[in-house]
Image (cartoon, rainbow, N blue to C red; front, side, top):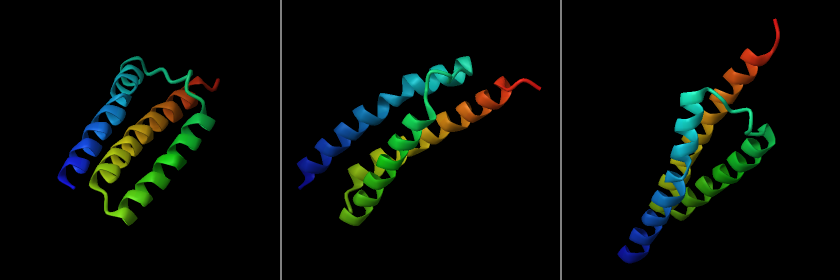
Length: 90
């Protein structure tokens, strides 16, 4: 059981950590124009469903990975919303 949790946490670290470069780049450049709203919506919906599944299954690796990924996606969405709003001509 412990080995399965360690494997899940390692997988969670790698798959969630892959968001860090995109998030840092978007934060630094304030550019999210290449991210589509449909992509963010569909991916976020899937992540929420995985999070719910992890909570129901009481699997800490799934909960931690998807909770963290959801925060990263929320941050990207906020940056995109701010960027889209500033791109609208006044």
